[in-house]
Image (cartoon, rainbow, N blue to C red; front, side):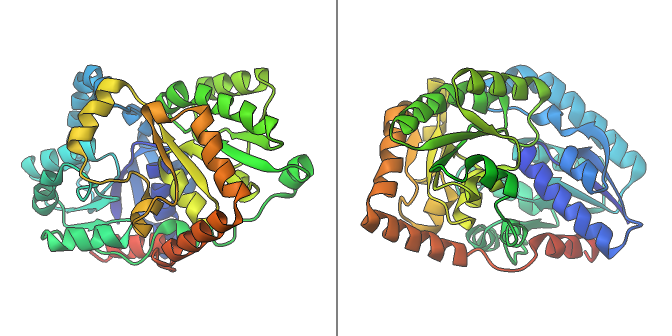
Length: 371
């Protein structure tokens, strides 16, 4: 089977890589190619384009890149129409991938088009539902509430579990971590995986680290997988110059070895929840971006664990609230108050139970191959 696969950022690349591994377990002769990152390539995919093409963040940052993105869409459409793969699997990056699916259908592509990690139509821009109904054969969402929303709006959706449930089941704290940090009260600081994340959050987390250190904790920064070499160098230089530690292994290992987490909103919050770790969720952005998003988003909370529990188990510190003082205050509230800690830990346990318990990536591969 010939499968075109596309992703556009680190989290999407991880999911795409899991899909590739499970598809090749089913049949190693499958040819999987497209716009991929390191995880997908390591899993056995062939990259015709780099997912770095779509590493954009923020409404204002996207605008100058529009001509290049449109050229990319045309080039990919042309190549898909030439090869005519059996299926097209588009992972995350909804704005580009909705546009690409529409272009393919208009160009006469009649194969299966699948949305792996579909747009968050339940949160904002619900009008995109019509694109999912029109251009996609089915969606493979991450969460049960997404699955129900899509079905209620006439979109074919298939769901069994969240992939991280299966993926994190055997996660352990490495011996190297214990040797380096085993005697300290570690707090994991997660500055993100994109240039935008580092630019708008690193200084805030460095200030947080200084306060945590004064309180007797050991702040350790994560160097996220998939960071470009230049961005990794910048992160290491600034963190080490400030006298703090960096963990070069996976962020999951760091969180599991920590007492609590502070970091940029995203998949890391779901990982923290599944690992049973409390997290102060931060998100800083340009004021104009924030003003625009506030008018577009239709949910009260941005963090998935909070949505699953329908309460603020993770504090969401946005824009002017994302300060070292507030982050430290929220972490200490959890760490120093046994009643607060027990209440939050119970809520997180209940949220984890709603995530399913099977191998989601295997399920995705079977759905695509048998479509």
